[in-house]
Each structure stands twice: as structure tokens, then as C-alpha cells.
Amino acid sequence: MQRFIALMILLIPGFIAALGIKWMRDTVFGILHPLVPFLWLQFLLGLLLFALGLGFIGGFIFHRDRKRNKVQPRFQKK
Image 1: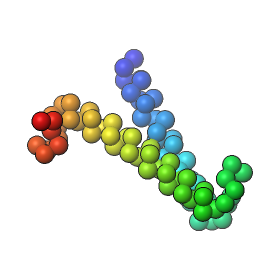
Image 2: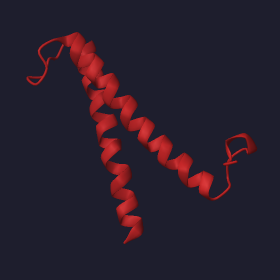
Image 3: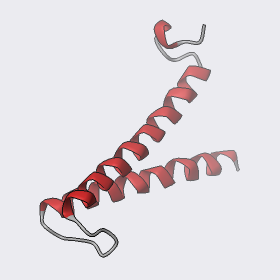
Image 4: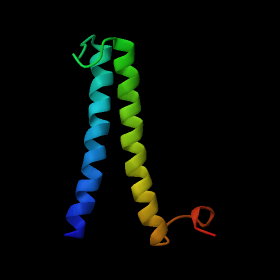
């Protein structure tokens, strides 16, 4: 059950990051979504969603590796 919960915790930010990439790609091709009034705003929101999703996944993996002492000495807890 714990692995399923961990998978769900990682899938949701993964989908958010994928949505961010899609919005940025659609901005390049000039496709405007009805939720956003301007292309430049759509690109910035996509960049924000991508950064948040990727940052969450990276932080999750870093936290897990830090608990298992699999990081370099400068990243270990003092």
C-alpha cells in the first residue's frame, strides 16, 4: 500500500509538469487555451507548472536518497 501511495504522490506532479510542457509547446505553435487569455501568460504558467512539478519530484528523490545515505557528504544532514 505504501508503494502505491508513493507512486500516486509522484504521478500527480509528473502530470502537472507534463501539462506545463504542453502549454509551452502550444504557445510556440500559437494555440491558445480557453483558460488563459494571452499566449505569453500561457507560456509563463506552463513554465511555472513545469518547474513546480520537476522540483517536487526532484525534492522527493533527494529526500529519499538522503534518508538512505546515498548522497554526497556535502548534502548529508549535519
